[in-house]
View (cartoon, rainbow, N blue to C red):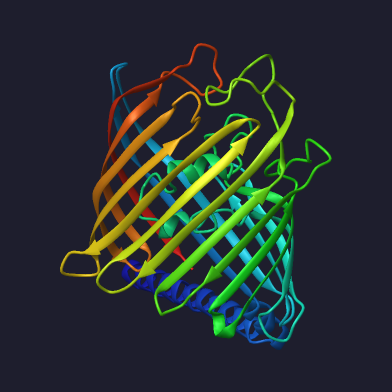
Length: 374
């Protein structure tokens, strides 16, 4: 009798378990069908087709040694995510945020002509000065990303008078291309103050960029800027590169560059000459950077020579050389290792009292992992 009762209870328990599992599966199936039917709706498909998501992260390790001492650190340099929304065939919007720093870009584009001859852009975006500045860090050979001259003259971070602006600004741009893409132009009217802030004076900066592609793979680029800077330093701090410009002072801020970019299966190379004027101080320099595949496109040797004089009057010149390898393990994902030599360095931050520009060897070793999705 006891065995029969046990058998009945066991049978009921198994039946209940089967019923519960079947009910749960039914609910999951119903939810899946509901989700599928929602995604198949015409307006949902239309919305998804008009939005593109992108993102990348760059993290690594750096080691530096000079006469002052040795430093080393792990770094999370960039974690960027951006969304592009195509409102109409001519009108679009972009929003970009760096989770390791601040909001980077937000702008809207409207194509005025039927072809690509004229588009207007309004918002916060990268300025068109220099060959390198508009390019993504994910496509640059150097872990340091841009050359010393580009970083200083475009507002990417090394100029204390302007601060870290990531080469971006608020303003308006007119750009386009003609002759089947052989000729491209860009005219920017910017605040000249950088990202996420109002203009510090009543002057606007004008930047002109011209590109010409005479043959396949070769791009010639000329850029220029006329404007007025506004020193953001306070509390009597000065820039080691330009100590005569006072806190809150407006000053002449002009630049011009001339460069080239060549890409082929055998090698890639780009170089540029740059010159700038800040107040009465002249800065100038040039660089040549390239990469060569080592038997396979996945493994490349990277090399660069970079010269820049921050202040030609004071003789604040620096030579920089880079040699290293990079391994593209998946599409736009790579692992980089580079040795970096500099002939000069700062003893502290560029705006700190007592900081000196010292001519002397600085040896660095940098490693970086890059992951990107489109």
